[in-house]
Image (tube, rainbow, N blue to C red; front, side, top):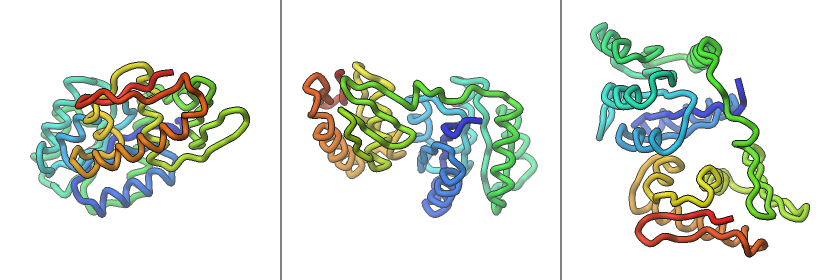
Length: 229
């Protein structure tokens, strides 16, 4: 299992969500947190994940519907339901949808970690390759694993959000990236305030990349961005 194994976590309880993100990231997973089913589906459609952990009772779209939509697009990605719903009928419904495990709250974090690792080992899913963690951007070398942007042997350590935004843009170099797709993948929620925050990070990245005039993050009005390099 790679340190870069990516997990889509969809959990509407902010406290539970942030605790799980911290725990999973401390065990060297890459985690994208979404707070409702609609944003979770948008994130899943915008990038690839190795694993999904879904709550069931959520606004916008419940976990059962989200799992059904994910399965319609990907038959093999592992899915765990993590929910307070303990009824046998709910468990049966989940397994009939093709989920790999059903964990009820409250739960033990170490047990959850063992379940995730067991499913990954059993499925033998491919992990993120080195080419997905190290990118060439003009004269820059971007090491996403270590959050480093390097040019002419000068390194800049990016913040986590800067790193995630640039990594997403690198995965779609010279292609239009829609604002909502980027917001869903990195912030987990599409709203006005996160949109303003995203614009601030794009401005910072433009400043970091200005040492190579061949590289720019082009703004496509009302649509999104293109990382040209």
